[in-house]
Image (cartoon, rainbow, N blue to C red; front, side, top):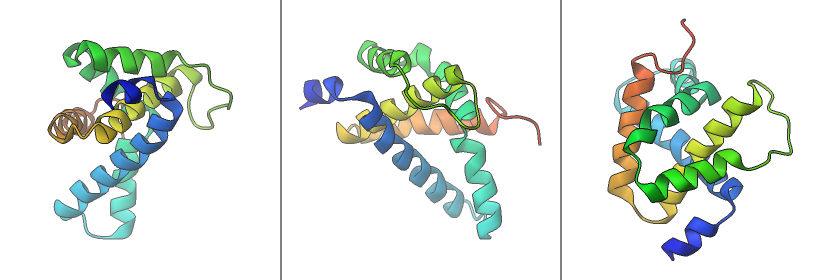
Amino acid sequence: MESDLLKMDTSVLAYLGDAVFSSWIRRRLIEAGWGSIDRLHRQTVRYVRADAQAAALAFLTPGLTEQEADLARRARNKRISSKPRHTDPLTYKKATAFEALVGYLYLAGETERLNELLEQAAAYIEGGGGNEPG
């Protein structure tokens, strides 16, 4: 099963990873008591923006296993057919690689590893990594 997942289309993994990460962040913010929908939305966007995800991947990369790094590299290097709307193509590809890694770990049932990486990514973003001021 795991080797099948490693061969899966990285766009499909990223599609799932986007939903997993967004849901994980929303739950984290709700549990932290961010309250109103407007505040929750603004804080969620801070984490799920392409530049934040791309920066989180760069931060996490030195600690990835060889298998995880290979998957992220494959996702990053995949040719994109659509034009990113709110970021440059390289940042978009790096963010997609982050999402593909999240999707892979989720499908592989690597819950502990997934949570470890998501906690590290969230802490990095909270510290200002990948986010514009304000």
